[in-house]
Image (cartoon, helix red, strand yellow):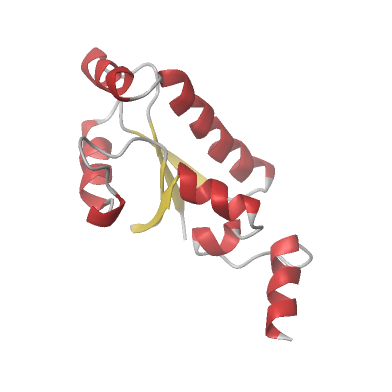
Length: 127
């Protein structure tokens, strides 16, 4: 299983960056992306970055695969968007909530490693 995080680099096209700037502060998008990627790296969870600003196919794929009920009322879903292979897992807010609840592995569709807070919590629930 490969976790895929759809991000927007600042090296993307001007049109895309202008679109993103008109929807939300680019700084906040970058901060959220860094938060997700940093957590995955720190916890040695393998992932791929998919840049929607530099690759039209990535942008199309992300837009088409975010479920309808997870899309904003107007406009397009903004990065970061998180998938496990092609299965949508959520956006930054869903990731943040899972992290706060020590449930990131479940959120990502992965098995929590033995000894982790999440694995211990799951063991207590099953007992």
